[in-house]
Length: 178
Length: 254
Image 1 (cartoon, rainbow over the protein chains, first blue to last red):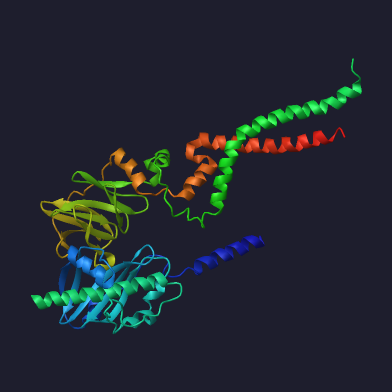
Image 2 (cartoon, rainbow over the protein chains, first blue to last red):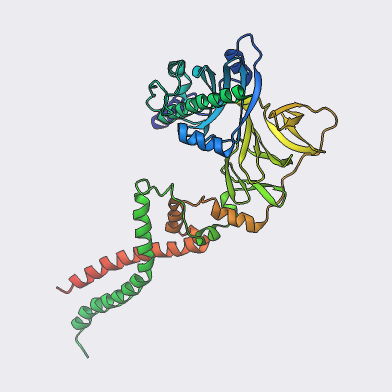
């Protein structure tokens, strides 16, 4: 009887000990992100088509190839908002990244589907990206502290940030040549 | 007539000789099986170090033994002259080309403006005719969920999203209320058996760990295989018992 009670207690403790990120979680919707990114403004939706040449440039300049042939973004003035997905370990993490004048002003985890690494959604991690830009070698110009146990998710966030900065640069170039 | 004492001395020797004969015969029969069990057992003991749960079996014949049903239920929709399918693990395939994941169970596939629209419960994927991913719309990016299916009305694709039929705009990757009568939902079909068999191999779902486990237990060859391994187990028991018995009989005359 005693061993059964102990087993029950252990099972209950196991359930209670599960991290709240054990299942797919959505933290922020698109409209909420846009409201945060463009307070009081109505951003204009745009689409950036990524030709083979542009994808090759992304690979050579930031070491990343966008996973889709086109990327949608929202713009008001010089500020752009990007919703990107990057694989952590096995599942994509949806990130909302706001870029202004070549620097990130805000980065939010919108949806997290992995069973581990959900800690990256916390502000102590995401706020490190504020003010970060790309250096000449295509890396972030400021070091980002990782999180023990969430290395892959932190790396995915780093990649998404680099890609958003690179995409924002392409969007600026396209706007300038219009 | 030989004395009684002689026959009582020879009887154990005769029994030992009989046992030895059968021990050898059983040993020869069990030898192949024991070798297989030892090799697979050793490999399985070090499965993690050898990364057997990650490495796919490269031969074709084991996949044929498992058959297409082993990969789980494939759900497929016919697109032009090919099929778009989702396997038990959630990955989607255009023909035998893997296209990656899709959130939730696939609920519909439609051709839209020379593109392919794939609906899964929590995601819409827009693909080129050869399966390259153009764009995606998920719950986090404004898709009402669950997505229950697709329909085509003239040139337009309609998406049953969040319980309502909505018009799909491929350029804006957006939905707008459709109104009118409920259209006929596109239903999944029955993919050709040959494609399922090919997919079973192409998907690389059979990892060495599962293959060796099933070989070790005999399940790879169905119930007959299990029976053969059972016989091998009984033979091993008999070999051990007969070995001990022979050892005892040989010692007794001294």
